[in-house]
Image 1 (tube, rainbow, N blue to C red):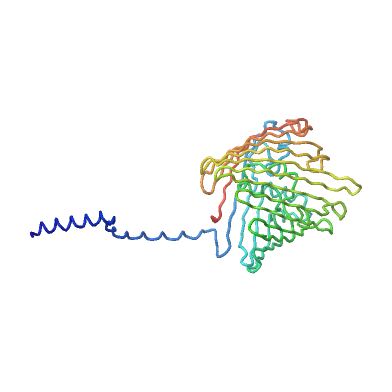
Image 2: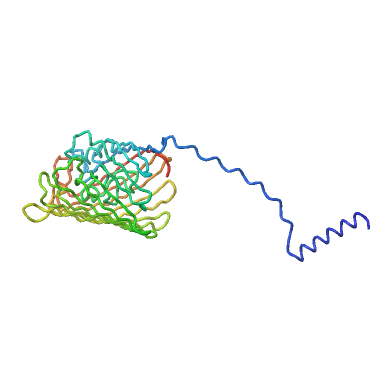
Length: 378
């Protein structure tokens, strides 16, 4: 047999064998690509301590053109028809392993307003938080914090960038505390429930204004796409007396329906008992919706009703409502901008309309807010 004939016969035999047994020779293994180098450590982390911060400024056009220069029923972004600094802050934080800490230092209108009723010296208004944490490895998730910390109540927080809207809700402004001084313990129970208890000086006071203490109780349930948060506070809040307890129940149901759509309902009810009998009652309900249209653009809306039966919170007995529509654009990884329209109503003459007096029952504003921030990605 010639070489050509042998070669043809061998080729035909291999082809038939492959057809019979359904196998083909395996291709040579590809050389694995080299693993990408680990990302460089963030410049804002030094050892185990993370540094972060933000600067939040805004311009609000108030269509009432109030002579007082103030947006009625607002907190934090008070100033009307002028550019203003809302809040600038720096945070230092070390996760408890088992001991950690957090310190938040900031200034601006928000900082001044939060501590406006605090009997502590004025310099402490720049200290938003300062606490140490202890999380024993054998305690199955128990964490104890001691110091000054922001409240666990409410559907919103002090930092603008972590909220859906630029302005804060009526409930955040008038129904709940901003911070506490004392001790807080939180602990998981099973896979879906987290409980907590705190013993603190009271509402928004680093230095206590009486000898009594306020107790706080936390109960949060997380199941799939739904989180149900509950807070109850009770204790004496009047100056130089332990009589007349103030009670607050705060609850929020948050639903993350999918990667783009979320909504929540927040309810607050509070009563401050008078020493001579009776109670000053205030509270309401808020609902909000957020849609992440693209990685850079989102839209959010909020609608709420607030009742201040005796004027305990706002200074005027009233029923107030507000509607807010906010567009958000994430310009870069460190810059966020928001354009917001808000309409407020009251059943009383509460809003200034160019006269320096509260002679109007509604208010419309348009706000442009810019928030620059930095910190390690988590």
